[in-house]
Image (tube, rainbow, N blue to C red; front, side):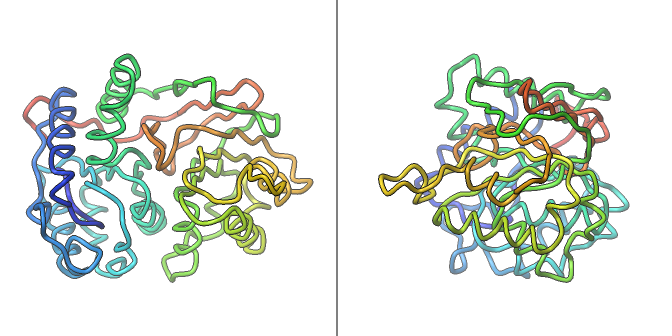
Length: 319
């Protein structure tokens, strides 16, 4: 099911949504659109009011025919309905939710409350219908196979496909649970009553990306994680490719993202893998929140050690 759980569908991007449906069907899924996913429908900066979105999300969570939910786009809405989600429905029938940006709040909060493994992965319209269309054909085919296998397979996926952009910012190897998302949303989640308990970060591999703002904001967010004790608990870090962040590599000798990260980490001797394809630049590698991974920064390796979901039925059987 494709759902509008945050931002609205602008009419100009309706063709991209159509492309996303084609991609999902090519992977073997039956793709349906939730009622709020209608071009031109909006409430302020959202697809609908928080209460309306929560009602639609809860209906999807309770519908046994819906086996997965991929979000149309991000935005600025999820904070408005965190307290309206039917967590009992998730516990009764856990189903993966795919998306990034504002949807990071759903992944983190629902993992904390129910143990649901959410996918920090490409959104439908700007991702499958946008970035995937512009990617080389071989990369698109690789992503289709990766997403399909991850959503339907019963075995761990193993190493994610690395690219030459990956950088070792601090060498080392570790294993731990994958926790993270959009940095600004991670900080917001920890400011609510639904925050992940600090114990969730014990031995975790923290992954994050950020979009917009200034380099100094990233530095400040990392210090929030330091002050909260999170950086003292994690065993490794994976950093996504930054998107539209002012002040990185600027002529006034501003720091690089790696310099910012290592500055805040200080003498914490944990592996750090940087410039990985997770985030707003797309296309995205899927990062299932809560499953165990192996990180070897020097070898530029990130491997998923567990299956991410109960296998989904494909070819006309599930959404």
